[in-house]
Image (cartoon, one colour):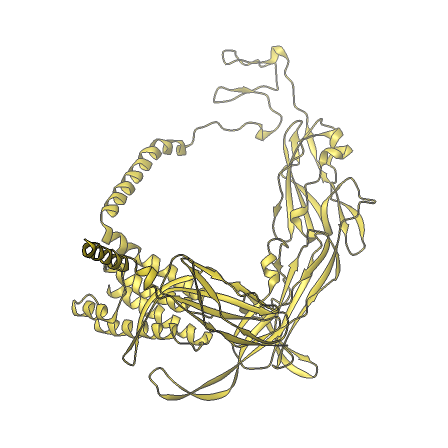
Length: 604
């Protein structure tokens, strides 16, 4: 009996070991790779944290160290790859985190590692060291941030100028300008100045910003200058702090000997990392004064002028006139409200006015408001000028301007006597000279030629008879096509392959300037996804064996198969090498993938 209990317990124990591998045999490894071990004050370096062994139930735990700041950059990416180098096989299946590291105090920091929590267990990466320095003048470049004013009023435009002075041979750069994060709140827009210069797009915090190029002499030395000017419109009174702009660059500093992928010693460019930052800005934003504010003030801040136009100047009493009120000048137009014509005495006396509350139409450095008015009597001889009040921040005073006036002719609306009214059964009364017999059988009394309008039905009304059946046929054809595609999965994949690959290429293009593996991962997914969708292949890793099989089955030419193998191998090699590659190398690889995609579209 005891022996049977012992055997039963043994079976239960081994069953526990068999069905609980995650508890006993879990193999989670954490590794960190730094983009640089030297960090300048005001700059940020990137740590790539690789969690191998799991893709679920992972929580990141960032270190808490005085003087250093850690932040997670975006969501982690899941990856599963197998790489064979010199006959050695290595696999990875897990998550990759990007972590930004910045500092407020210089010095040398020893970080014990970065932790992750998985199923209640803590896993820690290897420790690493960071040396924090002041930027100093270690590179021949400089950033200057300036504003046209330091004291402004609410909604007053202020120009922010950013200049990047460069002398060194820049291989790659990472530009940061926190002001762009508040672009919607500050109504940020590009200034028109400098458009005549040569323009170059630079990537700043993920935005493509047009800088114009020129040369300047600074402290006796000639620099190449990239300059951009923004206009901002602060809407809240108080102190507006503008954080400094910064740029991290890789500068060519000669060459060095390194081993390439296959172990050969080659001469490669030696790159040195450098950093520069501007000084911060502080703006004092004042509220619009209440004292001496006119009743016609409607929110304008700047310097403006005004004009009015009318769609018709020959009307009858009670006829509508569409008035266009146009305000031009320098300032923020979104805050300007339409003038109230009902508050102007001459409009009250001579016109029926219902004030329009519709927003204006902003275009070509102006804003236009539409307003309908109706003359009350035939004594009206003009449309009076309209007043507009605004606050001028230069003179710090309110100002009221008047538009032009418009001459107007108002005709009397004639009234018929009772015995002058003619019905369709009556004969024309020849003694009434103001009545005219028409060929169509209508009798009318009118004051000017355009008082009568034709009521003849046009041919386009006949099109309404054909429109409903045409719509029905189009919907029927599209519905049948949709049902056919839904039943044929392979056809759906093949037809959507090109659009999917184009979207992936656009994403890869945006990632060219970023460091990390996301660019190479997107290129790999573009090629593998396109071939798989076009040929209705199963999901899974797309290996050289699969490509050779496609070539053997004549589904892919030998030339395209060799190019596909070569580029995919190169992409995988770059994804797992620690060396950072420059933007020019990434751009070249992107162009090669684009050319290969065009060849695949013709063959498959």
